[in-house]
Length: 296
Length: 335
Image (tube, rainbow over all chains, first blue to last red; front, side, top):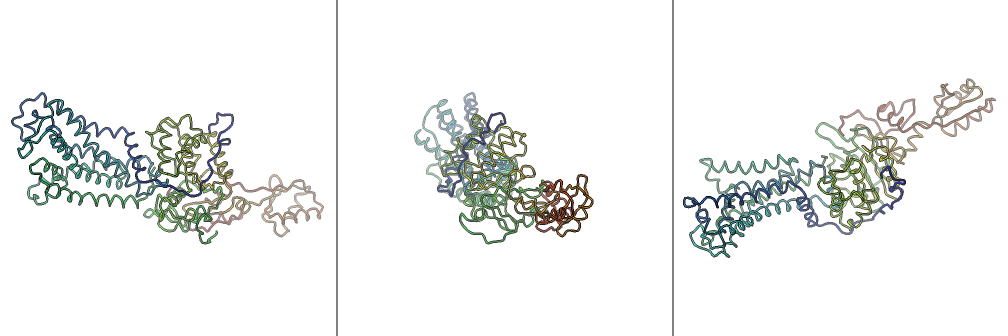
């Protein structure tokens, strides 16, 4: 359509013939795949991942230089130089309260609001996908990112720890030793269990993103809620509600590192997180289904 | 305006809106709009900025919920049927928007994935149509406004639409870009695609459209064939004779001849063709020679301003009776 050409291809090129009716509709999976590709293509995606990669590396370097571990409060901290497999446990302990929720909220809080801000939501909602499909794909993508952040962090911590201190048996919170292979499985399982509250944080981020239509507000709102719940948990006299705070569930995975395994806190965590996460997702879904898309 | 029941299936109107209202608190953006876009129309949706055109298109595409009323695309309501109602429908509202961090090709691949139905195989074809093939590997963030408009058309064509809804497609384009955009729209219409073209650019609508709805302050003040509008608004003639003074007396005495007056370049009058024919015979009978009898249709610009600025007075005024669709007190307006 440029004016420079001798003949306008607009007039010469074949125009796509009109179709009658669509036979194949896209699935949630294909929308989800593209949500992931969009995430991969955005620089901001790597901000959270960089955070969860750099922190374990700093930790390992610092611990390598710092040789007095006898006065540590945590058994894994005292055992840090005995096995590299203590490192991912300590890192999960350290990052589960703030840094991993921050990484999760960076993407979940942005996932709808960013499209609102760019005006691309109207672009995708005028194709052959329903709003419910878009919502499901975006929520899944936000949770995939959260899981990626957790396992990337764990992998970096494990590799760095093993390189520094070797692949040896580990002593659990109960004081019993487990083999290196079993410890590796426990590291994986602990991170998997930690995903329960982290997915809940992501669900809250998704709700705020769909509702506020503002990335900064949704990200800050999500991490702000986590901080608020931590503060509530510290208020004297409110001990009764502490087991039901989302932030208390961030440590439920520690039940796996006891002998015998403490399943009760994990089960408790699952239903408490469901109380936060399911209504958040459902509310986000309803908001997204009914709201006007007028921006851009 | 037709109020026939909406037939289902392929025979249904491409766009049929009834009593469409959108209110934002106290602000009435769209006020009981009815639209009938027929298959094969190049339908101009014309109005000043803030008249409610974009809001109406958003409702038609299911992006926003009407406060009242319904809109159907090929007999399907986007609010009730979701994406299924958009089968065979494509277009953009306001400027087309894309992911700036992706290339044009990746953007189209994404949209093709959201379309399904093998749309991805048409990517090269539509890129060629809008002449973006050589730049398809560049990020959209570096595209000019005109290139994004063209990419918007390409994205729409991926869906092999039967109905193309374009909101101000030529806005922001340079003159050559506007010309090429019009050529493309004309070509698409020629290939059987129904086009709903929202615009405030009168020459664009006059050049491309066969039917129009003129909207002002959220209300449709005219809907119908552009030719009918122009006929209604100004079946005027300019007459030069061998004796203009006598000819004016003859004209004023003839039934069906209205607003006959002496102008700078002869006599100006309004009449339909039959009465003009009778006048020419009467002039000959009176021994007056006709030097020139020239029809002068009102321009779309004249009619537009009569309808949108003259309100009810303009619509019915002596300067050219244009039948609007009823004039109500002016509500507040939103774009």
